[in-house]
Image (cartoon, rainbow, N blue to C red; front, side, top):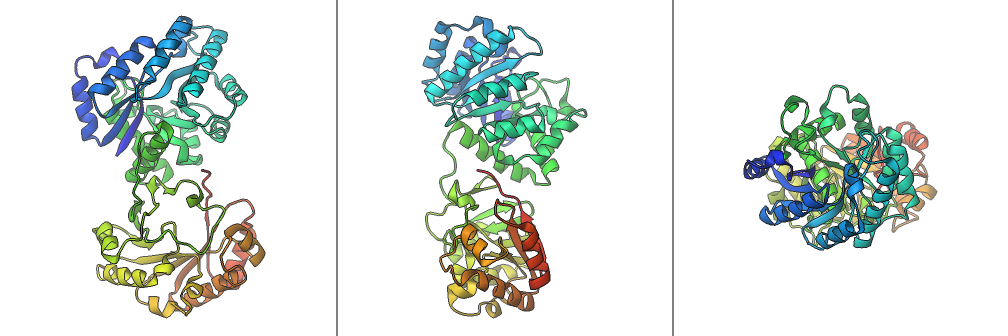
Amino acid sequence: MLVDAHAHLTDKKFERDLQGVIKRSEKAGIERIVNVGDKLETSKISVALAHVYPMLVASVGVHPHYARFYSHEVEEHLASLAEDPKVVAIGEIGLDYHYRNSEPELQKQVFCQQLKLARTLNLPAIIHCRDAYSDLIAILQEEARRERPGVVHCFSGTRNDAEQLLAMGYYLGIGGPITYPNADSLRAVVTEINLNRVVLETDSPYLAPQHKRGQRNEPSYIKHIARQVAELRNLTLKDIAAITRYNATRLFGWLGDSVGKIAYPIGHNLYLNITNQCTNRCLFCRSNNDYVVKGHYLKLDREPSEEEILQAAGDVEEFDEVVFCGFGEPTIRLDTVKAVAKQLKARGVPIRLDTNGQGDLINGRDILPELRGLIDSISISLNAHNQTTYNKLCQPKLRQKAFAAVLEFTRKAKQVIGQVHVSAVDFPGVNITKCRKLAEEELGVPLRVRSYSVP
């Protein structure tokens, strides 16, 4: 399911066939469209349309082009409209120094007034910025940190602009320009930034993706934008859909997933989330914040049975690998791991175990012989080069035994299973160089470095 985080379906170009546009959006797998107001009149229409078409939500605001028409009376009307439960943001507001339909000083004044309105109403802001990133960032930095910042729509700034906005908690809207031949700088930014605050948008009817340029843009074309981002990040279309859908849910505050997934695909692998229990409390674990990985909500309300896991896994033959992973330590449920792995092995799919390496401690015995023939490879979380660092960053329950147990488990796994590697997160305090030396020279296994994802 995809979300179009910014469209202007109030535009006259949609007058004749809006119902058809909505139907094509549904067929394209779009779950929700944020229909954006850019002045008082279109804001009113946007709210009205949101009550006609269930997949639409609305935003209300005054675009910088119309800053000269902003007044206290207009602001009162916007505040009244924003009381509607279908309104999810204040916008489109911001700065535009390219066309200068309104003077920059007036634009800044009106922008700040609408930011204050958004803060008062506890709504995120949908921000337009063209040729004004310096002033935009300065204004946003002067504000107190907002509980619900907002999104910079149709982001076109530099990597430094992106990093500053992300650091303040803002999201970045990526649209059709990502597909344009002259957009190498934008593609470079999207390739490098963290995706956990990126949303997709069409800005319909404007900025159609490259192979639709010259045509009226519409929400169903968002799949072309998603494919471009997926290609840049070496992910699948489903991955990008899941990530950006969750981001939009978090940004705009509508109800998202409330039931943790047992099986979730990332790339060409299927991951099995069989427990949230763990013997570590790692400082860098996403479960400290939102229980979400690549757009998949993984907080379990209970531990699934063997039958439920197999049912959730479905047809595993389409995947390159099935991985016992999730937010907990799989070897806490060793019997379930073995039973499920036995069933899946019969289907000919490779099985990997992602573990913190404390399985022997947890079960009070050498568990690797029991995994021989069921598990094809093992990934062991190392994350430190010595016990002191491990205890500080991973906070194991068995502080005096855990790190030594991880090292011993790794050595034995290399002999029993064969395909083994250790991993480390590039989190502050993790010495990747020393971890690599420990892995390769002392344990005799390769090290994989995982990027830390800032919440």
